[in-house]
Length: 168
Image 1 (cartoon, rainbow, N blue to C red):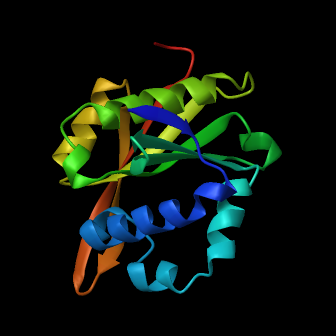
Image 2 (cartoon, rainbow, N blue to C red; image 1 turned 60 degrees about the vertical axis):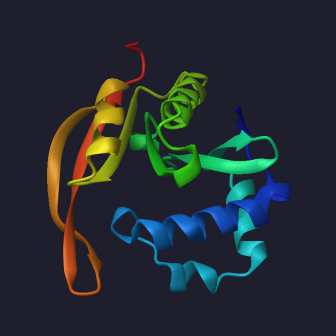
């Protein structure tokens, strides 16, 4: 599997993958299928061209099989932090190490920026596979946000995690 940065030319594949993610795991994302499906392709292209976001894709041949994003903080006093977001691996590609490779690639990308000291993320409480992956990659839980996401009549908590970038 190849992992590389996504560009505007990947917008259609990125859109399709994220709509699948929102549909498959609605409790894991704050965006919904309906919200994002309504966005024109140009919105997805701009997201991939945004200098404050870096999206990495894992490819199985030509097929985009997984994704992870980094959101860089624009505010001066918080520019030492980056947020890992939008992590998703398609069902056929799960349990093959792609998730770990994507997180490791995101960590490597973040380390390329000397000003960055901290990487943070949230994971839905109860998502044991993702929580375990992040722990294995060195992330530490520091908080719990109750009722963070609502899907229909159900509410889901978010676990907040972080790690220092200088530590391997």
